[in-house]
Amino acid sequence: MAKKNAPSAKMSLTVERVQTGIRIEKRILKILKALAEYHDFTLGDLLEGMILHNFEGKTPFGQDSLKIIAELKRIYKFDLDATASHRLSEN
Image (cartoon, rainbow, N blue to C red; front, side):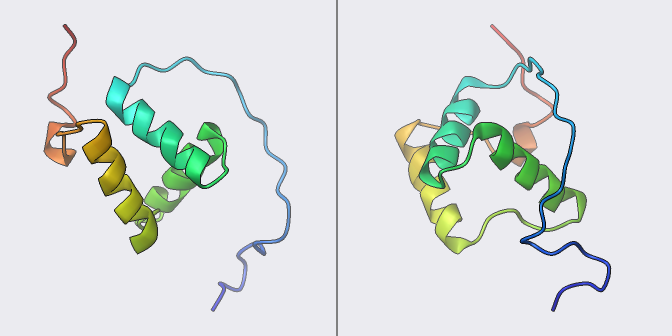
């Protein structure tokens, strides 16, 4: 059931987007780009959706997407988990 004041999923919302340059771990980016392509999203749309879900304490991915992510992690030899998030350094 939708929240009383929540916008309809079909209603378009106008926002201002900005171009940004961020640095991100290479394999994370590969996985995100592949996942966005799989869902026919832009990378920016995927990231916005993930962030909006996380801001509400919700998981952005269902079981099907999690299976795809697991396969992409295997393909890109991705061995990091959430515990690594504040310990990453560059060569």
